[in-house]
Structure formats: structure tokens, C-alpha cells
Image (tube, rainbow, N blue to C red; front, side, top):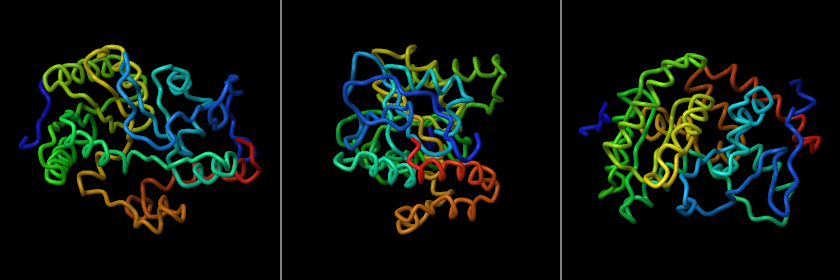
Length: 266
């Protein structure tokens, strides 16, 4: 299966497990924040997995064994996404330089890095139409970038046979295009599951697999990003609901993170 190259808890508690002891570092509950500014992480002997932590992902941790395993995986590289969490961690670690690093921004930094350093980028996820549009726009924005796309069939969580087929298709796309970085845009839990399966299978071939959620959709130009003042003001989610009303239940679930943040329980 070759890659389709575009022409080419209750609000009072956050319900996070107890953090493991560490010598130094930043923690949001039990989640280690490893990425505070520089991007992308350096190449290692194994393929790393990049996760951007937002309120919705943090709230899902206790009920999501796949996410728990991914967070504990030594491959994991985790940054802060979402203005609310960034404010909270700035308060918790006032002396620490900490940059908000979200997939919707980092996909462009990764493309610029690839164009400048001859690194190849595969976009894996979204729909075929949006994936192809994102590939073309990134090429236009970063001339010389080697980027291709593969939009696998949608699959339901718990459908192991369908997930196996998507993993196999992804591995075939990776083998065909030979990317240095693979950006996943499949929805949080699906891409977390796939990242944990893909990374060990591409050690020595791929530098990193990045869980970037809706970043491919935004890079396509079809899904608009909130204005900068709304991003900085912590109300970007309201803009996204305005653009995509189906996101309202997600916003309401994410609001449960506010009381613990205000009370310092993180």
C-alpha cells in the first residue's frame, strides 16, 4: 500500500496517578514534561514519540491504559499544549523557562527544519483530501521540503483487525517514502496507540513519530486556527467550537480541568 503523495472525574480532582520519583524535571501530575523549548528533539538510538499534553489528554489519563503506557515509555517526549496547562505549570515552576509547544504550531517548525536540513516528512492521517492539501501547502511554504502523505482508512477503537491493517499500511508507506519524521493526525487515542506500535518497528529508520492531533487538518488550510490574541488569551477552544460545533462536548469535558488547576492540584 504506497503512500498517497499529493500531486503528489469530577471537577474537584484531576484523577492522575501519583508521579514516580525523579531527580529533576517538570511534572504535570504523573506526566513528565520533557520538552520545554527546543524542537525537534535530537535523534536517538531509538525512534522517539512526541506527545503534546493538553487538558483533554490529561483528563483521559486514568481511563486510558494506552496513554498511561505511552507516558511511561522511555521513548516519550512530552511538551505542554494548551494555554491553561501552560499557565498552571508556569505558576508551579516560576523559575523554569517553559514554552507552549502545540502540534498546530510545531508542524510548521518541523517542515522548516526538514527543508533546511534535508529531512523527509510523512503526514499520516486525516482524510485523503485534507492530507493531500496539507502536503501541497507545506511544499509551497517550505520549498525543497520532501513531504508526502498517507491517509489510512478510519477504524474504531477496539477493532483490532482494522487497527492491524492501518499499522501495516502505515509501515508500508514508511518503507516506501523513507521519512525521518512521521506526523500522526488520527485523533488522540488512536494516534497514541499507533505511535506505540509504530515506533519500535521503525527503529533505525525514523527519528521520531509525532502525535499532533488536528495539525494536519489545520495545515491543509481547510480548518482555520484561532487568531493569536485568542490563543494567548486561553480561549482558542471557543473559536474551534465556533468553527466546528461538533467539538462542543469535547470543550465541556475539558472544562473539568479548571478547578484542579485553580486549586493547584496538579
